[in-house]
Image 1 (spheres, rainbow, N blue to C red):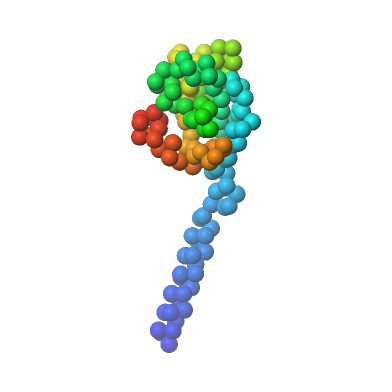
Image 2 (image 1 turned 90 degrees about the vertical axis):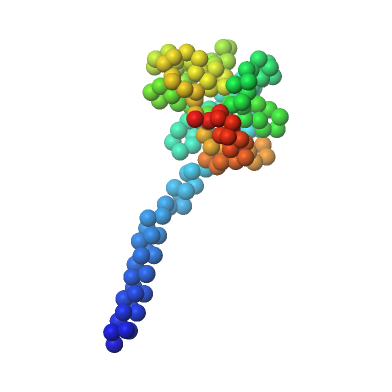
Length: 165
């Protein structure tokens, strides 16, 4: 009788642990919020697109040929190249205090109105107080689209090259 009780108790314990583990797993809707696919075919040169990923604004800027031609090596290392076109893809928050910088197409830069910080068209800080460039989120290139939240080959190459913080 004791062995039967022990077996039943063991099965019950395993069932309880499985149920607890399932309740701790994130819901499918939460998992889906981790990835955002952005089709870049509609992007226009020197016009900022703003997408949302994990509650944060994502800046996507398709660069003109003139913008690419005058880039330094540091700037071009931050470019995401999709279909031969150069893009800036970054989290659209100032690295100083988290404000959202405005894009100025005429100057081809970003200006943070809170404390006057500036970033160039590659998201690199050019005028203090921002302490570092705007953050490039994890991404993967799938054809003419970018999947935010997934670490693709291009993102890993940027990481290995020391482009990402």
